Length: 562
Image 1 (spheres, rainbow, N blue to C red):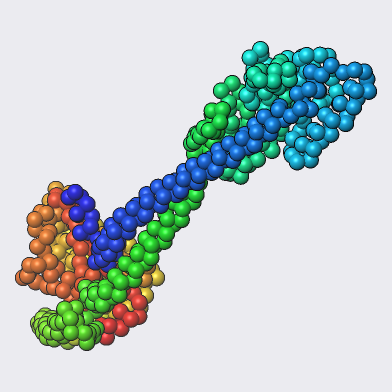
Image 2 (cartoon, rainbow, N blue to C red; image 1 turned 180 degrees about the vertical axis):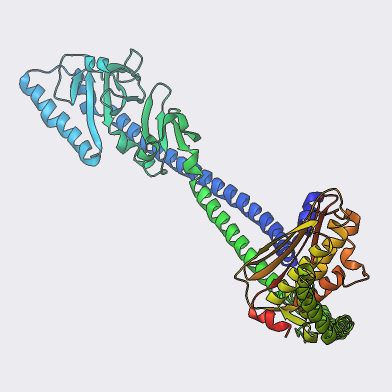
């Protein structure tokens, strides 16, 4: 929980607003979406189940009507004189037989066919004699070929069976013609054959994607599976089943539907609801982003101005006319910038005046003309008397002071600064009997550039006085590197002297020295080029010290010191 709070608090203000708006909106939207989803799914499933129940009830009533119709018809036929007497009559010759079968029996059945064209066949089975006539009158032995037949299969009441050829028959015994006053039944019987698709026609439109089955206590009378269900592998079928019993003969109608089809409308609706929820979330996210951007815009403007101040650009102006807290903060910030600019200008001018005074005071300590004349005289006398070292020293001093004093100017060229350092190093080597070595690594393609006077000499002097000369344990070495890298001039002064304690390194640029030291050079660099162009000091105690700095080589910065 703490980590979540930390992550949220570490977000920027705009993202916090987005998270807040999105969180406030997503909770009621999620609750509403879940409620609508569950309620819709349940209603659709209930609707599907109600539809199936209604359909199967309608089909059951229709089948009851069909059963009643054909049983009544069969009972009517079994009581008709032509049906009763035809298989039992004792015929007096062929003519009488022909007349009975063709003009009475057949004509009677044809009338029934006209009224019920859906009937496939009406057959009277003769158990009394061997008399037969087409399909209308057949011996009882034909029934024995059916799988459902047994001695008690046919009764005085209608019974329903599925024949071997796939037709459905309803059959019952025919009353005995010789019993006038007592109801008795002969072994003769009559059956009506029906097409199961006709009998169970009402089941065709009961549903889509289903399996339906009609069973009697002894047989499965009808079974149908829609093609779409047949394509589903048996092991993956999960059924929703409804059943209903007919009022007659205890037939059971079983309706089975794969659950995936039953829930298909619900799934479609669920997808629609989910898409609507995601669309609402997208709109919510868009509105959260839009509103947060609207509210944060003025804060971002203020933040950008603060970044410019942080980067050193104080020449900005910002004003907000809105009377709210952000407007008040913006205007107060502008007032603060104005005050800072005023103080910076005062402080900057004071520092420039002070540094110029210090440099001029240092240069004024020597009378240049008198010094140059003396050095020229010393050089002449030395050459006359063959004193080469004295002559060399006087020439070096002349070069050194000419470049140092620089006719009183505060700026010098980069090449003159290098001459000044080299003459100073040669003088020091003569003064100390060459007890140290100097290595120069100076880029020959350095640009013509004006820089503040006396940047390198104080650094070299510090390396000699505080690093190399006090170290008696090894020969001193000093390296001066000047290179042009990515349009910046990089300076490095490295020595193998005593080094500087770590605690003192941190205070060198903050401490005033008795001479023209590191703090002075660092301040002049930063005043001239900016805060990022100061000195950097790295030192390893008893091993080495390295001082580096860089200045821009482009014309814009070069012109800044003019």
